[in-house]
Length: 260
Length: 260
Image (cartoon, rainbow over all chains, first blue to last red; front, side):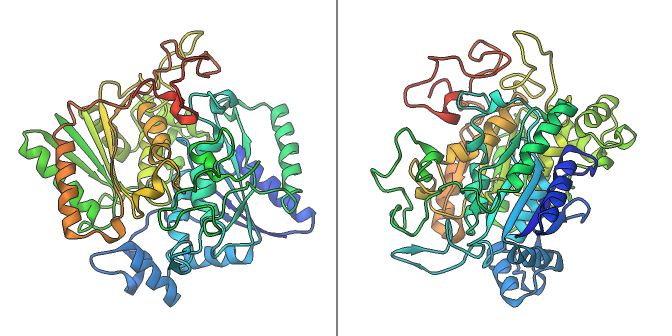
């Protein structure tokens, strides 16, 4: 297994840093290859702007065509090209980050915004009457797996079916489905650690054990069963789920999971 | 009315720039005061790190206590203090941004991550048997209103009840409820413009007219009826919605709206 860990926390001696270190040690001990993108250590540039596209930046700047032209010419900035190369090298991608304001930290969103360029992350494949681009189950990263390892300050009950923050699977859906499944990654159920604002040593030991088990089953775990876009479940081009396909009791984001 | 516009797009001559300019012109012509935080023009720093907290940064860095100590001492960085001052000055806040990967651009997420500091955006108020902090309907920004003005590249059908991306109100819930309602803002229904990858002049004229109407009704529009946290709807401290309170047909995020 070739694993890329994309890690976003400013403090190496943090819980997130410890979970990242544990992943590196566990996977390497099991004979796997591991590379780490430590976004804070890399001083990762978060904001998409004209400088990302060099001579291919249109004026006025239009992000999509500029991004596509620079990607096609191989002239995206070196930091972005390096991340794209790591993604193509990897067969498994781990994202290690704290949940801040119900989603990923800005520096990691900036990794997505810049690395998932046009013609790499989106704008791939043909559009016709039966096919709306290679995405949601197809795309550049098809055949690879991804998993989120997320620390959450609050208690788990706040993130359950009736919890005030909404269900964790719905909070993570825009990342799981909209960011990872979109360019073709298979998405494993997340590793979520709650109550991390005041975690005890004993709780950390337990969490480390559970994370180790998840790490050692990355190759065999069953991905979330998101529906593929171009294989009959959706009307094209409206991309609405066809009537009658929903599982009992599923609504909203849950419609796009075909089985559990 | 005193309106702060938080604007996140790298190109002034973009659709987002035009909508921001239209908001400034429309509100000023109507006699309102307007201030703009143009995050790209300000070269806004997106990543939370120890430099945000100066001498109050703990070592190892723990973000929450460091953030709270620097806020209490009035020594958060000048850029963050200026934004907090603008928020306290304003009675209405407009967020103008393109949807990138199903949420806000990284630079705007970095505005949230840094400006909504501990003791300002969260960690406000007492915790006891009946009150779980001043949040979700109470908090520092209580009494103010907020609205998202969002441009979306794809067509509206992709963002409907059965659309492949999920319903737009669910995609925006973590921002509406988790970021804006959390520190006390009342949240107006969003202004969402679809199909902006290829918008025509005629479509822009129509959109401008609709946005103008929304801008001129900011003071009178009815906010989304999110449930307040500390007024009986939730069990404390589990913060699960009490049984029987849900509206018919509501699930997940939708449970936390008390009426339509």
